[in-house]
Image (cartoon, rainbow, N blue to C red; front, side, top):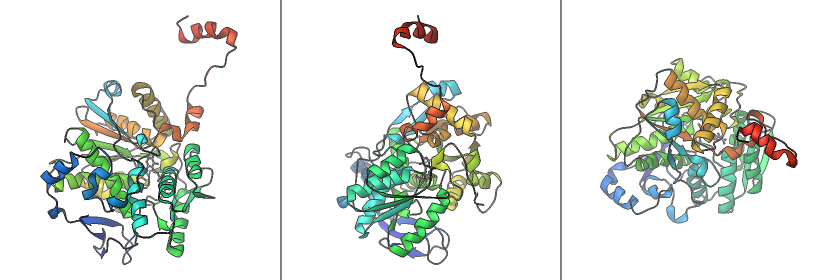
Length: 410
Ligand code: AN7
């Protein structure tokens, strides 16, 4: 492994890579995993990688966990789908969707959890824990089961999608539903982890984000060692945008690519503290007390990774936008019906955000654009039932007549 340390992004203090520490003990800043890139040679890496299938662990030289002990369910290697029908509707030249719903538990979280839970095993953790808007808990529950570790998840009561809750229960996690928001749940679980020695696997855990950065390597490879002009993705706790940006920066640092994409974050109207900070050019994030959106995965008022994500947007010369719930559901339906990709509402925010930024002239139509669809549509079936049209109920004797009337093909 080529890991050097865990380094505070605020004050620069360093910690040993095997320390159980989530934020800087001196200043409270977020930690980043650092590597000795000088010992890595691009041509050698490319040669080794060319012999391995597309997956998170393909890139083990740039990961902080021991691949010989990996806790894996076959994560990563998701499709990068060229979306020609949607592109022509939007008048865009080259549009792709990276479909993270193809991961083992149906979201991008699996990229992080395979590394995070492998690390938990390496560090001798007795149990894992997280707070969650749904997908983190589903993923952590599955990887903890695979590792044989007990898992505790705390979710905001009544506020997470059914499919996700069902996954956490199915994999045997202890699920506590607290009265409060995701942000309240995260506060509680952080305290518990400090006191009881549970291993925390929210995205404040620097190891988890290392797994998530592999999306950048995959996109580059799937485009034939090309870098897109833009990456568009939903922002909740702001870990994923930070992780993916790191991945692209590393490829440039290693001399594998020359360019980096502009990172474009999308938030929902009722839960947009990060977007507002960027749009108003503020130095600090002001948390939102009661976030609300149909996209329950990103119903987050106090994104813990805001400072990393701010750097991602600023350094990449990217941007942010805000979309309404209606725009999110419309985008979800469009993607499902034009491209055969059924994604959950938070993921559809990336498409809704693209539409908005094209209208605003922030993104131009001749760019190569990758939207990240972070989770599978089946995670949240209730949204479809609520917002889409009902199926027709009909007596069997009247099927032909009704089909003729409804479909106009009688
Ligand atoms: C589908 O599961 O925070 O900006 O606790 O499930 O990295 O937080 C989920 C987040 C986007 C936002 N899309 O990513 C959780 C949780 C989907 C998500 C996000 C989430 P970050």
